[in-house]
Length: 455
Image 1 (tube, rainbow, N blue to C red):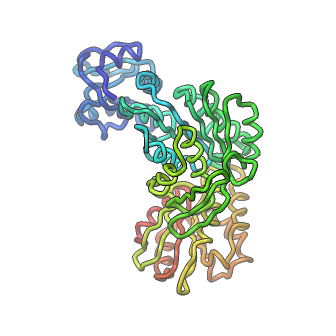
Image 2: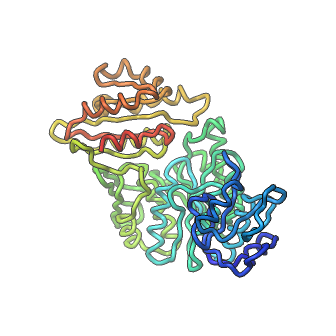
Image 3: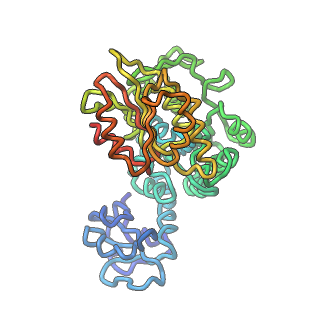
């Protein structure tokens, strides 16, 4: 972005006390990330953002928003008074979005939205100026900041849109008014706050609430909950998945250690992605659907998918300190994701007596069903395929109890949340050079610390 303070103030139906001609090129809400020509937005959180205005200015910020009526407003720096800084941030993003006027692709889903976002951006970047969500900056703060970070030359804006409560995607959809909506799948993520998968599906469908009349809805056709709800959408629709009834479906699928290959029903083109697993093929099918919508041919799409770079901590292979291969997937976790990743991991070949060792941490935000959902993972675990299991966290005790009659005692290990260091020491003593290791757990379990120690 590049706007004078006077224009920003006008967009927010306010005024600025000084420095109207100052040019703003970025917006920050973390005072430590303030730079010259930035505007600071003091958000309410664990601490009041207004307490950090002086820090932001010291780090180079040119101006700040300020909540009307909040005491202590500075008089020696440019200030724009607003009713609420977060609402003002969103209003400024909406104004700038209208000014640049890119085509908007919105992506949501219980799993796979970050990977799908990365794939779609790679496919569309072949011919268009594309700006995408960084990492998974996908909530009511992250989406407007992503919008404000795009260059004026942006032609397509690829937005990851997350939610953890009803109404959140409705609000984000109203903010961005997407031209294309993508839903990757419906799982159990955040079921603590929704109660049922039906309610999760209802909340995910909110992304279509402000889909433009001539827009496109692309969704996972293998999910009955989406099939039912999509019937009410009047805009153009297409599906992806593994059923012959889908618009585009995978006909062949092979998973290797570092990549997967597949073909689709209506093309002779072979596709390759630098990730493993059927669920990532599903994400790629969504990206193919979007690419075709924008006129990309399958050869161009295949080239982009083969070379795209996934966001960190999502099924990436790394080498441990004794030579073992480690699958790093520690960003987040839920039952659907664990079963998918475990299945993919179990298909990876091991050589020279190597074993498959899985380290599973608690899946958070599962509410009253947490114990049952953790125990249900036992159905996806076979000692002949996943040879050694390390379970970490209080909820994983339910899975441990479900597996005691399935696994030998020597191959099933449980650790409380206070025993991470002991688990790491046991792992380091256990792992051999030809083993392959999988790390999977919710971000709050901090299995990245295990990864760091193993490397």
